[in-house]
Length: 106
Image (cartoon, rainbow, N blue to C red; front, top):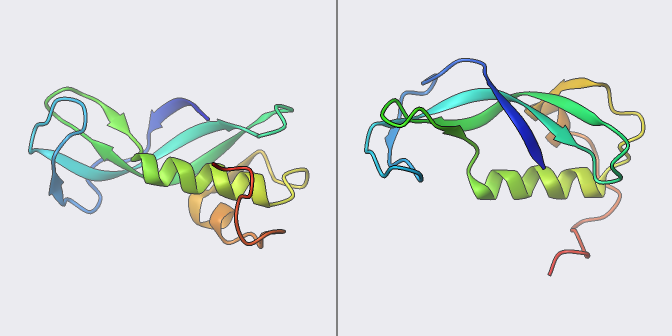
C-alpha cells in the first residue's frame, strides 16, 4: 500500500495524458518516490523512481492502479526479509519471484 508520495522529478517523459482525478489533458508522466508497507506489516520501504502521473492543474501526483497492483504482487511473491530500506522500482521488479503469480488475488 502506498502510504506517502514524494516528488522526485516531474514530466521526465513529457507525454501528455488525462488526469484520473480532474480529467485535465495536461497530466504528464513523472517519476516519484513512495513509501510502501510490506505485506507482512513489519516495516515500510522506500521505492524510488516509480513511474507516476503528475497533473499541473489539480496538483495530484499518483501511480496508476495497474502499476500499484504490479508492486503489490511483486511484494507478495518475493522474499521481503532481505530487502533494503531503499531501492528503485526497477531493482524491486528485477528481484526473482518464488511463485509465478499471486494465487491469493481474486
